Amino acid sequence: MTTSASPKSPDTTTVLATLSHWIDGKPVESTSGRYGPVHNPATGAQEKQVGFATVAEVDAAVASARTAFESWGQSSLARRTAILFKYRELLDAHRDELARLITAEHGKVHSDALGEVARGMEIVELACGISVQLKGELSTQVSTRVDVASIRQPLGVVAGITPFNFPAMVPMWMFPLAIACGNTFVLKPSEKDPSASLLLARLASEAGLPEGVLNVVQGDKVAVDRLLEHPDVEAVSFVGSTPIARYIQLKAVEHGKRVQALGGAKNHMLVLPDADLDLAADQAINAAYGSAGERCMAVSVVVAVGGTGDELVAKIADRARNLRVGPGDDPASEMGPLITREHRDKVASYVASAAAQGAEVVVDGTGHTVEGHEDGFFLGVSLLDRVPLTADAYRDEIFGPVLCVVRAETYEEALKLINDSRWGNGTAIFTRDGGAARRFQLEVKAGMVGVNVPIPVPVGYHSFGGWKDSLFGDLHVYGNDGIAFYTQGKVITTRWPDPSDGGINLGFPSNS
Image 1 (cartoon, helix red, strand yellow):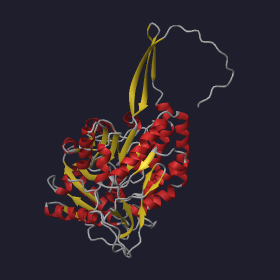
Image 2 (cartoon, rainbow, N blue to C red):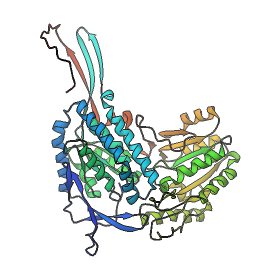
Image 3 (spheres, rainbow, N blue to C red):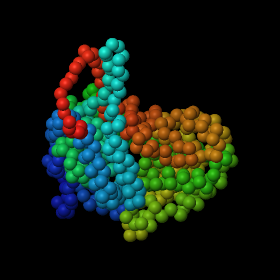
Image 4 (tube, rainbow, N blue to C red):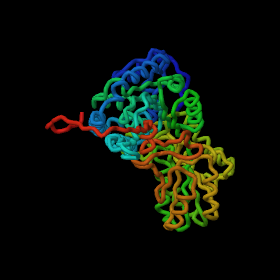
């Protein structure tokens, strides 16, 4: 969950497009009189505003979902998957439109936004195959004429609270799988870039999803707290910062809900002396500065082992100085702006504090401006070397284009450094040594591990999630964990007399 500036009434001197909720299959305007600004980060201009939900509006969305569940939860797998296949087709046809909305409100370059949409569609494709995932199990003749079956059934109304950095992908991590399992869904997207969520909902409606199965409520903490407290919401999924993830878990559990809350990260990339340093430098650049570092799986720290540090830092610095920073809709841009002016300034402050706390600033991206976009929320890339483990830049999740390099003499020292981190989202090792890589993947304390892969985000049929302060709750998102989260198990034991069942029907059996 992200927080905005204090909500205020719209500026009467400027006519702004006002973004609404999506409840019961149609747009619904907010009546709260409270609004959040939606900026174009490349220009710094407020181009839209989003109306924040009242408690009554959240209740209306949940009521719509509850009513829809009565029929949707009983609908056939054939019907659900037919709608999801159509939805996937519509997403494919509108992927460029979705990407343009993401670029306009988040700031990431268009190619990155297209990649976000593609990765979200992977989960839609997984949901299209839900019939296989929900087959259940059967044991026959466990005793004389006794059979035991295990099945999974939907929970009811479930909710998702999603962050600004992936306004299309993270919602698609949640609601397609949830509705495929027979649940209905209420989405509370980030108030900073809400347009993608509305297009996702509209396309789902066009695909034939019944009214009330997918609802979107825009808003802030008022909407979040009501979802966490509402007695008809059975489960809550969240992706965001660690402090808010911890809050979501505690609040949801207090109200008897199932919860999966993914928090922050400080992802380390370990580089052994035998690694291909050009490959490592390329991948460090991609993983640290892609999407302006606003990724929970971004590489934040490179751990250089042995004598690799000086050469590796030089190679990363050469590449960093040549990156093209500019507006996301410019095909020449490789990195766009940050989401807000306040966040841009906060990220920049870490570079200054790192220097004061003993780090060497190799590349300083603070003060960067883009010609013609001087009011945009731009920040150049920064590279910090020999960062003390006590420095704020090492200890905090910066969530921006700042890469720290720390040195370690041995593999053991490097591993301990990574395992001592309070986060355990993702990590990577770069090496040519298969034995070292195998040892690392077993010994490192993180939920996702890459071997010569810097951002090991799993494909849709494996689950995404970390350890330690990167995850609150037992189950990860999507994949098998996601299906388990959005369903509840039931075991059925039956005994029947040996029947003689007659009747003639020559029709071809079909799904209905």
